[in-house]
Length: 345
Ligand SMILES: NC(=O)c1ccc[n+]([C@@H]2O[C@H](COP(=O)([O-])OP(=O)(O)OC[C@H]3O[C@@H](n4cnc5c(N)ncnc54)[C@H](O)[C@@H]3O)[C@@H](O)[C@H]2O)c1
Ligand SMILES: [Zn+2]
Ligand SMILES: [Zn+2]
Image (cartoon, rainbow, N blue to C red; front, side, top):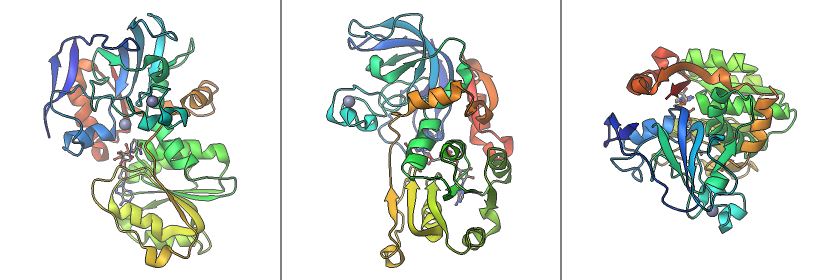
């Protein structure tokens, strides 16, 4: 089968690869119909994710059709259309029983990291009963690719952890696919203001279309002053960090109002300053989270009903044969205006 294989920092190849096999009774083999590329795949290619070693098939998002199931799989049968979660979960360990699938002792984020991933014609899914979701007949499967990772990430790590409530003032720092997913799902809670902040004018245009009440281009400076001006000098009740660099986390600390919540989503590769000398008295909360994908069934319903339209995030489409072009387009998002690229097998 064809697969996109990580060969070490800066190196990836599309090659012929052995088919995945069932390795445990609760495994399933899924034939991929559509997958996509995540910012985290680019982190891996930069060498930022040491758990992902050369030889690994990348990808942790996608939809497909069940090809084969192990003897212990009871929820799925060959031929069923499924959504693949970026998080694999046994459903039985202490962390899974708390709904913290991301820390499953025999799962978590393993797909396209410590086991072969979805940027291939076939993938082995561990703990299939609790790591796959059945796709309802007639669903827009392309839209559901956005449910493997970015929508639950934006919602769980940004909106739920950020404790967004009706009437709140929210700033979302970063208008990449994840920040935009927070922007779409924050609107479930009717915040009064959503300020989208990025350095990229095109992405801010998209944010405006997706429901941001204001946008601020950080490349032009004076971001804190602009946020203060928009919020009567108070700052925001919730600051969602959807970038993953020190500057954006510090910005969240500069714009948070007393009693507010900073919800970190970004994957940070280096240490970040925490200004407790200013914040100790401000009654703020800082949250961190690896996406658990516990909200996937709920999000699936909101997509089915048209309450959110994740296809708005899709900007480009490629065949698996051209996945190297897809990577190139995605990596040059500033020029190509790429958000999510769909790869069809
Ligand atoms: N916590 C989790 O479980 C989880 C899951 C998935 C992704 N992530 C992380 O979420 C983050 C966002 O993902 P993405 O795919 O949207 O990434 P992305 O790189 O596409 O988007 C980041 C955006 O931030 C903007 N930006 C960069 N520096 C900025 C600054 N100083 N101020 C304002 N904006 C700035 C960029 O222009 C870009 O539009 C990444 O760090 C990713 O690794 C976390
Ligand atoms: Zn991802
Ligand atoms: Zn578990």
